[in-house]
Length: 268
Image (cartoon, rainbow, N blue to C red; front, side, top):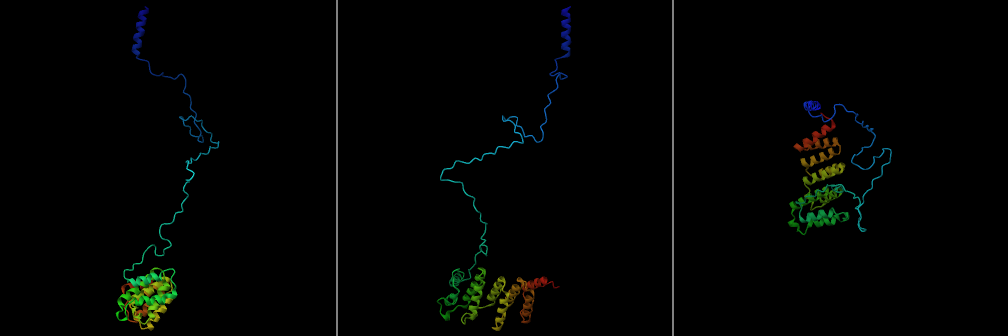
């Protein structure tokens, strides 16, 4: 009887199959994990150090300083200089003196020297004018280019007063007065305009008229531009009208400048 009951129990167990891996119902509820407050510090589960309370003062971190030899120290903070030649008014540009002769370049270099004495201008001007050349062999073309290059170079190096002195020296010299042409006059008007002494340019125009010097359209345009760049628009218009009265025909650049002046004046 017992054997029959054991066989029946075994058959019933095999019918049910293997027992489940976990029970249908947990006899004990899982332990509830507390939720950390938002202000709690982050806890690293792999760290052996105890968590630090937020109210505790943190220990200041130590700055690691390398062990340097006694004769070696850390470099001090450098003061960086702005890129560019701020002290140079021409922003590093150089004067192109390809039109100057050797004597003209020497004359210009002497004039732009910081230690040059203005009282020696007459002396070195005669030296530049003669240049060991006989009077009958005087080359007016080459000297005219030198005068133009020297005055233009003085304007480039912001030597306005010296440029005007050289110009007056050329005008007043019997041998050199013929070297003054409209290109030189246009350059000197431009230099005076940039310097802001357009009244001097206006007086120079009257002096040239007294000397019966025939001023061309480019010299007039340079003077009109000088007045306009300094905000003296009425004088620009007066010079333009004087140019037309003398029969000097305006060029395209002259019309461009005077139309800009009319726009500045609010004229239709």
